[in-house]
Length: 346
Image 1 (cartoon, one colour):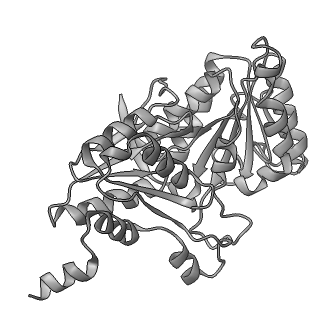
Image 2 (image 1 turned 90 degrees about the horizontal axis):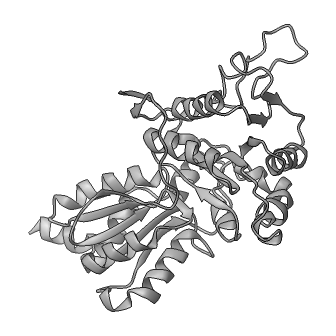
């Protein structure tokens, strides 16, 4: 039975159901319960934004508050998972992944390969991405492309509550290390989510809508902006296909290539940077594999190659939005905003 719940509640529910199903599932992180050593009741925090709240009373031995040492507790999560547990490590902000990069990049990602397939490391690292809160350059990044570059890691980026629950459950059940990126601006987004347990296969994109003129590939919060842009473009008879990859490693290239072969045009929307980013990767793969189908050069709508600004007005200018997506679609269609405005004036 589906009902509407928030994105963060869907994530909480996925963890609860997995912990009920499997006693080897544990949660480690900063204040995932909270209030230890104080007069407050345990479970006072539930993580920095309350995503794990309510789990500690149900599983007091398996929701583990850790000290402020990301390298220590993410390393512990990796080690526990290599020894039979299924650890979920909550890393407050993805910006802090650099503190524990070795544990993921050099250790977890390589165990299966280095031990000839005999070792598995079913660890899931949950972390927040995204700008829009004036949290400045050290709490607003979306560095998932760095981890998609690492063989052996799976990178998951949900865009709605339904996907968040199903994809996280799939990550926890998967035998490979997964990094699960949650856009903080989506936490209060509501959507229909079944109460029962379900999973969404990793590496399977979601085609949100079909259109004949252009393919838009968008990630996380950018999916909402892409839908808004598509509605505006539809008024001028421009029909857009919107694809949410859901996972960038593995990446469902078959769905993307098939769509571009039909539309002949591609716009990739990514809140992260264009240099060595997911948008550049997808644009390159399309150009290499379905070049003959292209009617125009692929377009990328990304953040500029600068740190995220703190000032709200600069941050708003920095972020991709529906207006920028619409302009990119018009460019690949050969129809500029100036032409549109002139036509309207006439």
